[in-house]
Length: 390
Image 1: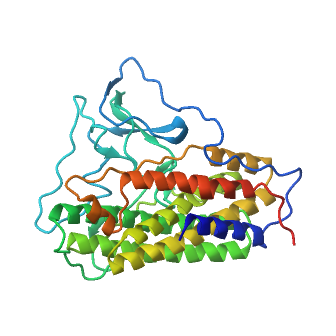
Image 2: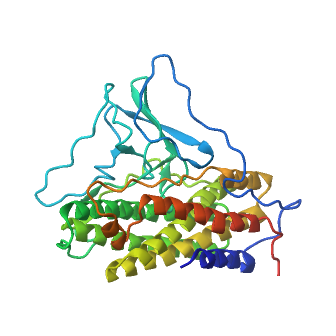
Image 3: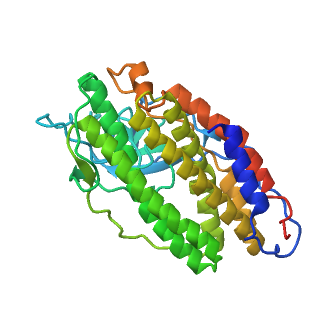
C-alpha cells in the first residue's frame, strides 16, 4: 500500500462519514499538523545531588521534546531482554545489563515501553536512574497506564501459535535477533487488545454512535489475530512456542473525558496506527518469505482500517465537543513525534534483516518522516473543514 493510497483512504473516510454531528458553536479551525507548531523541550533540571553519565546518542526527537522516566537502580527494559525476552532452547540467559558507577543501566542498552532507546545521558537522582525518551513513538496502539506503555511478559505456551521450527538457513545471531524483534511486536499486539477494549468502553462513556462501536470491536478482534500471527513468527525463529503471560491491568481506567479521549486517539490512532500501517506495508514489500509477506500485508491492511477509525472518531469528537476538545486535539497533533528506531542488532546481515520483514533504522526514520509529511499532515488539515452534513 503506497502512502498516497493510505492518505486517500483516510481522506475518503473523513469526507464520506455519516457519523459527524453539527459542530457546536463557532467556526472550525484546522488542527496544526504534527511538527507544524512550536514546542518547548521538557528536559528536567537536576538537583545538586544528581550525577549523569554520557554515552547515549544525541536526541533526534522531532522538535526536541523528550519524556523523562526514572527506574530503580539496575531495573528497566533492555535491548537484550526486550519485553520479557525469548528463550533459545538450552541457551544461556541473556547477559546482564551493563551498569555504571551508580548502578544504573547504561543508556546505550535501555529502552522504554514503546521500544524507544534512551536519548542523552542517564541521571542518578534521589536514588533512582532517570532517562529521557522521545515521546509519541509506540508501535501501533499501546496499552498506556499512567503515561507508560504496558505489555505482558513472554512465556512458553503453545495456544497462541503453531508448532515452531528453526529456520536453519539463518545464522544463529540473525535468527535470535528476528525472534526477539517479532516477540516485541507480538507483545505489543497483545497489549493492543486491551487498549481497544478500553477504547470501546470510552466510546460508550461519551455516547459515540453504534457504527464506531462496531468498528472498535472489530479492531479488538483484529489485534487478537495480529498477536497470534506475530507470536507464530517469534516462535518460528526462536524454535520454541512463545506466548504472553498474564497482562497486568492494575490501574487501567477508561476515561470519560471526551477531550482526553480525542487527544489520546490522535496520538495512538491518527499518528501511531497510520505509521504502523505504512511500516507493515514496507516490511511486507521487503520480505522474500511468503508467510512473512502474508502476515505483514494483513497487518498493514488492518492497521489502515484502525487508522481510519481513529480519524473518523476524532472528526466526530471535534464536531460534537466544545473548545476544550479542539484545544486538546490541536495540542496532540502539535506534540513531537519520535522518528527513532532501535539499532540493527549486532552480527546481523542487513540484507537478511530486510528479507525477513524488518526495516533498517535509516529506512524506518525516513518512512516515518514521509508518513507525517504525506499522510498525517494533510489529513490533520482536512479535519478543520466544515463537517459534511449531507
